[in-house]
Length: 194
Image (cartoon, rainbow, N blue to C red; front, side, top):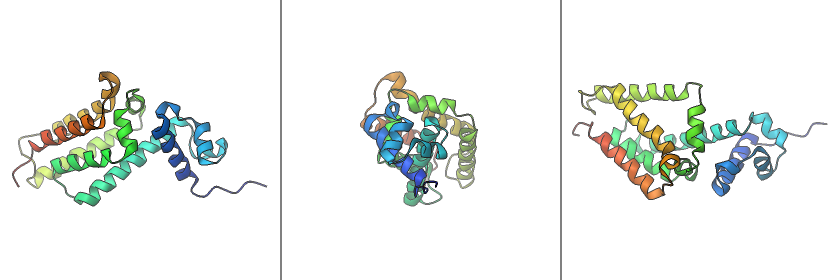
């Protein structure tokens, strides 16, 4: 007789993986360790995820979703660019997993981002360009900047920040917070007066 399905199996797996990442780092996360921490068999993990990379991917998507929902709750659907940058920084720093992603001096997440080929980052970039067009049409950012170049500049900054700890040496939360605030201040230079 087959064993009954574990309720909320996918979330339990992700919760266990997140706890392991936060407790021991990204490299310490293994399918066996996740299964043990979640109190389920390895086979049950493989019913939800193809492997460790897929779990890491799902963790990042979940973390990004938490951050986006928080920013939307705090600022609504039409925030100013600099406000969105600053609130995103606060959301990131209040989320232990996402903070760990940016402070990861082993570059696990930076290298993971480079391996993702499903087009999600391109789609995200197109959404940012569309948002910048909307801000420009609403008169909230200056008219003499191409939304595509502004989006590429800010996206490049974020992508580079994912690899900064690996390439430049360990970062601490205060430096990360200051860096993200600086990005917000740079973005504010493209805003019009309220």
